[in-house]
Image (spheres, helix red, strand yellow):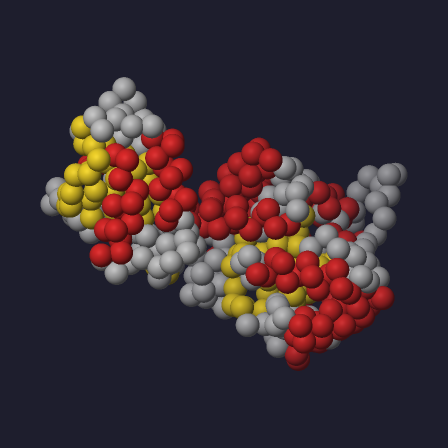
Length: 409
Ligand code: SF4
């Protein structure tokens, strides 16, 4: 386990209690390079998303990748359903470098995609394969069992098919994601382990062992499911099995088909944040049935809320109650509008001085209701001055400026 570089504040220990370390201890993983981005090791949790464009449309794909990268998506995934799509990636890469900059790309390979994978591996940094589909055997409705000989026979076929890709990625210093999906487990895994997290884990381990036998370890693993409890169980079991086996591959977290709107965000957060809080996970993707640009703020909010990355101002605000001395919602909105570009600061807006100052959670600045018509400004826990409410936001800005912590938007 390692400690994050960005600790949660434990100073201002007014009550002389021993400082409790509130940082999340991440499972120790090996660093896997994907272009100029590193997944795992001591790197912050990496944010990913995926474009919807057809990669045969070079200009639209380049524009979509750029749009995502500019708002903070650090690795962009594309899908390559055919050799022509895979070849188009060469052009997309060149155009990105010429008109914008190099962006780490991952290509998704589907059914029996060995040739496609070999082609696309020449042009991008990482290939994602789904063990349930990479060597695809059509399910047989009349089958009642899978003998171990049949199981091994397909295992041999998988090895044969995977080897050239592993060797290509290994020799180029590129990466692979072994992306298991609960919804697309291979039939032989379903027969042997059932539709279970264990079946998902065994699917991944079979592919990992082939990679390791060829001395290839630039591997990231995912265990996605659309049901949060299944996804949680699969990732936890994978992390445990890897620990037991002495494997330290980073994990890519996601809840598939999370849907859209508020529930899609909550569902994704329930899965991703729960695991991150347990120290599991090195890269995340929130999958929404919305424009991919909408996924990035959700990823950053999850990471910020857990104190794992700080990409915006952290606002602490009380829910308001009978003691509240001003319109809290309105004031919070005004304070946010004035200060939201000051990444790195924690600002509290609290309704009253009875509980406000004590509950500001060690914010850098506080805006607290003092008495009717007046608010008090705080620096940390120190009350700096009382000002009329209508000058509150302006005086808060002046205070931040006087401390040299203001930058113009
Ligand atoms: S800080 Fe004051 S106004 Fe806000 S909820 Fe607590 S008691 Fe109520």
